[in-house]
Image (cartoon, rainbow, N blue to C red; front, side, top):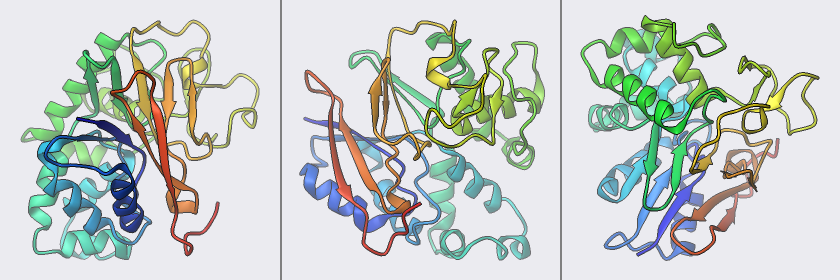
Length: 278
């Protein structure tokens, strides 16, 4: 049995097929972890969702910001749905759209495997969170997404405020702050306040900002973290962090990380020639 984490697919279906072939993925015994952003921009989001949904008994999925955006658009009226991009519109207009959307809405914000010693998220964890706190807050958001009030949450989750986590937050502000941390964070200041504009590689940020995993005084966590979201960071291994968004949709690579060996191992396939490099 092998366990692989896979970076941001973003609708890049041919590359996902080639990566699974290269991994010699066996659905009878192997497992896949997807770190979010399954959809958007790659033009075959519908095929990606169908493939992963078909393998759902063998997959762990954590939601990314693009996945949440799709869920939000799915709750809008039909006329508003037509204003989304063609790739997501194909998902919303498919015969099996309701099944795929319901399945996606029931996926995790964070997943931890104690035996492997790995935690999967899309973007990262707040510097002030312990692993226990992070998982507790993830479960809180997941309950809201899966509950009867999910439509209101999906309507109100957009926005950059509050930009910093506080245990005193409540209601939709609390859920929005948590979602932004789990799915949108790259850089923070020393207080854990997210800068949503800084997206370049480390070293390009303004003074006073740190990659979320290098903030001074951040909590120590007894786990290794697998994440995506940050294509400008690219493949990264250090400080207990394994970043695997290697910008496939921008002409880079689609990357997998084998988790069950003595040492994590990266495996990647190149993007299709027509992808545009960022």
